[in-house]
Length: 172
Image (cartoon, rainbow, N blue to C red):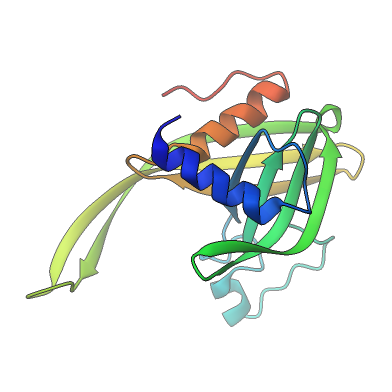
C-alpha cells in the first residue's frame, strides 16, 4: 500500500473510531446514481420529485468498512477535510452478503478556469460499481466509487470485500 492510500485509510479508520472496531478495509462510496437521480434519491431525482419509498438505503456519502467477519455501512458527511459519521445504515455478517462489482473506464470533458483563459480538459477515471445483496433483508445496496490515478483505496477496498465473500478480485 502506497503512502497516500495508507494515509487515506488511516483517516477513514479515525472517522470510524467508536463506530466500527477492527477495520480491515474501508472507503467512502457514494450511493449509485447520487448525482443523476437514478437511485430515486439523487440530487436531480429530488429536483424532479422522484421519491424512494423503500427501506432506508445508502446515503449520499457512505463509509463502507470491512472487518474480519462483517460489512458495515454508515452514512457520512465531509467536515473540515475529514469524514464524520452521521448515522448507521446497517451491518451484516459476511456470510449474509453477496458482493457484485465491475469497473468501467469513463471519460468526460470538463470546462475549467484555474488561471488564464478557460480550458476544455478531458478527464478519465475508472468507476467501480458495487452491489451488496443482503440476504436476511432481501435487499440490494448499490454504490459507486472512482479510482483516480494514484488513488487505489477504492479498488483495494472493493477487492477486499470480494475476496472476503469468496469472489475473485477485480482485474487491474
